[in-house]
Amino acid sequence: MSKNCLVKSCTYDLNGCKVGVRFEPKLIRIMSTPELLVFLSNDLNKHTTRLVKLIKADYLILIGNPLKITNASLMVEIWGHLYASKFAKLLERVVRFKIIEKIKERSDTIDCGETGIDSNRKFWDLASKLLLIR
Image 1 (tube, rainbow, N blue to C red):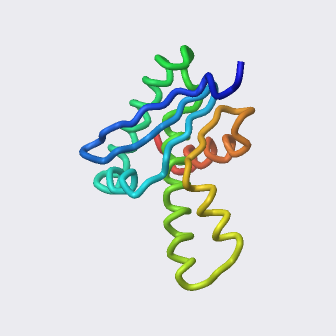
Image 2: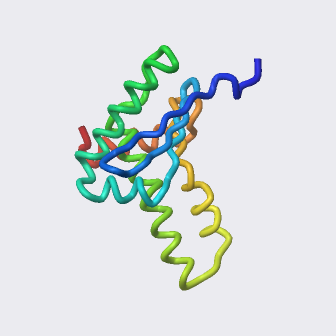
């Protein structure tokens, strides 16, 4: 069976903003779009919490197991990717470096995986604890 056979997806309509998410075993991929940024910017903590709860509930239904990422870690990872991409796009107006292109490319899709799948999981877990996200 091909890995793609296991991929499922949803598009959430969040206050008129469309947010696409793909679900795979031990991994979710959130499409980083201007609409996602608009939705989250209205009330960052509240709206990110809402999105994370929706994603985790649907992950459980679609994949059949809970996603083993804390809500806080997932929230911080979403913020990290969104704002790194925004910052890179602003920098690009002033300078052209390959690293800026890489940041933009890597931030188009927010890949959030469980430990063992996501090489940055420990970083996001630690960041969520340092920022006291609950």
